[in-house]
Length: 340
Image: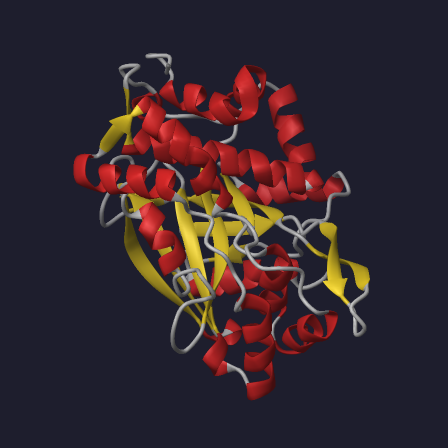
């Protein structure tokens, strides 16, 4: 049963155990309004926050550079303000992606019942992608946003499309009945009983992973020749591409991290408005399996995920924090996964 004072920690504990949940939650500066509950039910905001805690924890396990930065912050008595997570999806011209709904629809079916709405669309023409920001209705400044991007396979040549079909056409759907039941109830009622939430959580967390078999090396190289982003999805799937820490001064932070010898992006990306400044560590390399020409397993180091930083300023027109993104910034940040 959920602890009435911290339903998020109780939910996270169903997957990480009490000690693991305590460590994961302690890293983040969480809004009490999104974490507390009555011990019987779980609001959509609390479930969304628990999901984000688990996805942030997963990213740190896969990104040693980000984990080292976070360890420094925690050792210094600080906490992280989780601004947003980003993921990449595949969209064919027609039809689904294997068993998965096409492109971002694989995630809108999760995000919308949990209280998110599509706030803005960001064309990413250099990458032949489209990004969309999903913002939470209940606590837009304190529940992390999702930046969901789609790669448009039909904007590449025929050889690319054939390789993409072979890699992604066998994708399976990780959502089972427990997730579907909870999402339907969240959509209808805005809250679910704690046991229903706990049963659904592993299936929904699993959606943020890779759902297709190891790609053929030749197909991977075909994608890589035209799109580093498509090649990244071929090895990493729909896992968080990056998680982002909202900080007071991204420029000063970048200088400090660079002085520590960490693989920081060369420059800070600045939005057209000047209110949003972003930078990131370069992606940590990971080893992935591929299928060789004769069916043998081949291992290769490829770019994994990375950790990002953002500074947001007040929008003078609204008097509120500017929660937007910028297409130019996004395309610059995406370059962090171009090399291993």
